[in-house]
Amino acid sequence: MRLFVAIDLSKEIKTAATGLMHDLKKAGVKGNYVPSQNLHLTLAFIGEARADEVKAALAQLEFKSFRLTLSELGTFGDVLWVGTKGNQGLSGLARDVRRVLDAADIGYDTGKFVPHITLVRKCAGRWQGLPVPKEEMTVRKVSLMRSEQKDGKTVYTEIFAVNCK
Image (cartoon, rainbow, N blue to C red; front, side, top):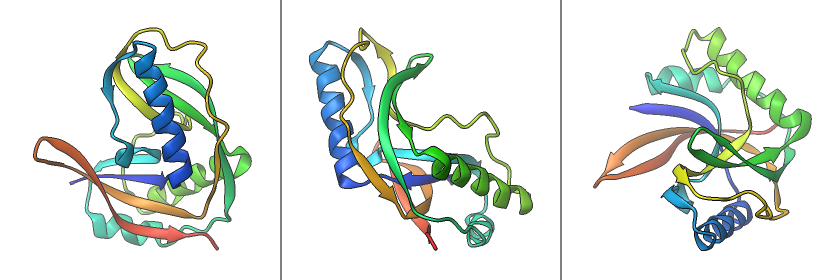
């Protein structure tokens, strides 16, 4: 079972991101678009691990709510994403998630944290200059997510959550 720690996005953020994907399609951008129900912001990708151990580690997490705002479009190779700003709250939360995983000796992708929401994989086409909707949300929960294949589709399921203090 593949696991990751994420911020589940508000309905408003998902609607704005879905509208942005529609604009990308209208602009001729091709690729594998992320289904709207799978939109999220990953804080730590864990991969294969025992869910009970990860749940116990995340139960130690404490954080305060903060605002998260959509920002610019960007890429990692052929992956197109919309960035987010959450100022100190977001970077602090990512750091704290990694701290509790480290304390429990749970491995995760230790690459630099770049806050983003993946929109299109294997992206091809011109996307520069498209406006990003000015949408924001309050982050009050962190989710442990399971990723699995069902009927040829990737399905994400929340299996544990930590609410802000």
